[in-house]
Length: 79
View 1 (tube, rainbow, N blue to C red):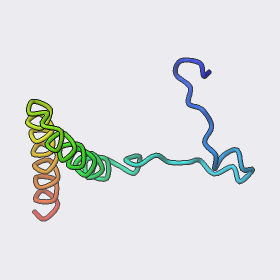
View 2 (view 1 turned 90 degrees about the horizontal axis):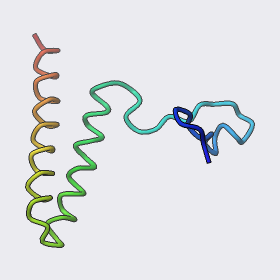
View 3 (view 1 turned 120 degrees about the horizontal axis):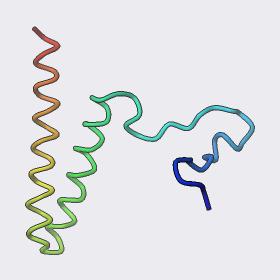
View 4 (view 1 turned 90 degrees about the vertical axis):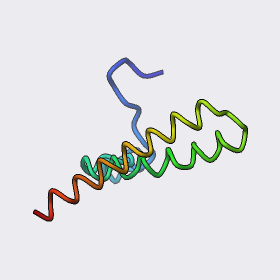
């Protein structure tokens, strides 16, 4: 069991390499939002398959929000 506020060491760091294992989404805001959008899309399909209508709707809204965030962020970089 780990203490609150501390993460368990990943297999990569225990292997003696000393490299910090990065979880998906630790590369910055844009990468995190893209990862969330991808995962939410898969969860939304699962909710739809099992006829979980409210979850399907809420996950759809989350996906839209993540996609909009990415769209606006890329638009800002172009200007």
